[in-house]
Length: 300
Ligand SMILES: O=C(O)CCC(=O)C(=O)O
Ligand SMILES: [Fe+2]
Image 1 (cartoon, rainbow, N blue to C red):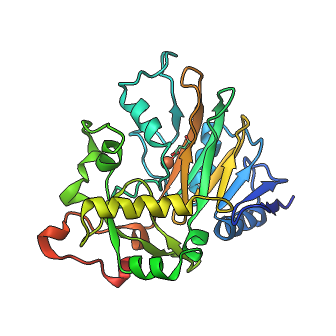
Image 2 (tube, rainbow, N blue to C red; image 1 turned 90 degrees about the horizontal axis):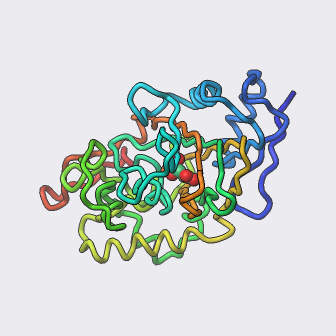
């Protein structure tokens, strides 16, 4: 059986893949999926109902997994505690879920940004809670000359501490929050996709500071780029059904969760693919005020 890849007709990216069982993929079927992933940047596999182990195995075909939680490859993005109660507004995980509702790319605040994200739906609220994806290749193509010229040499520092602080969640501690200020990764705003060679607008809520600009001007520019980029036809809204699996290329696609009634369960199974250090590793530990540091061409 060869998978059928049906590109979305109303967006600049994305495709639905049917006629495939992700539990048992033949080499020829995998070749089709891998090619479609690079070409369409996001794939939707309806009704797969993959268990944890099968999702992890499918994820590993794309590359090494990023460790999201110690000692486990499969992580649930859930608004419930293990005892079945709902997270409270003061819980760190509640704040993480609210943070996920802002447009972002995964792990850009870590030295090694992610290659791809996989999600599948286990339990869903009665309305809302969609996942949205936005095509940053098409966003780059849509940039006007003036903006392109203005941003082409710029880089931004990325920090989870900063992005959560923007939401009023400033007091957390922990590993990922540590890459702030002098330890924040510095990433060019325009990225060249390491495999396809496409130019990509590499932005998202974790970007917070631009060397050579005031923080206020940088934030205004970064907010404006997100606002202008994340508009139709560059946005795909996935209205979940239990059993669906989606994957996006984190090197060229922004994503966010949409709000829902937090008193209803929403449980997704997440697998994240680590970036290739050759291309997704960013310099950290320097601050523009310290040295006038600029990323080298090899980091673009
Ligand atoms: O909950 C969602 O829809 C998105 C979650 C997310 O940001 C992620 O899996 O990286
Ligand atoms: Fe995410």
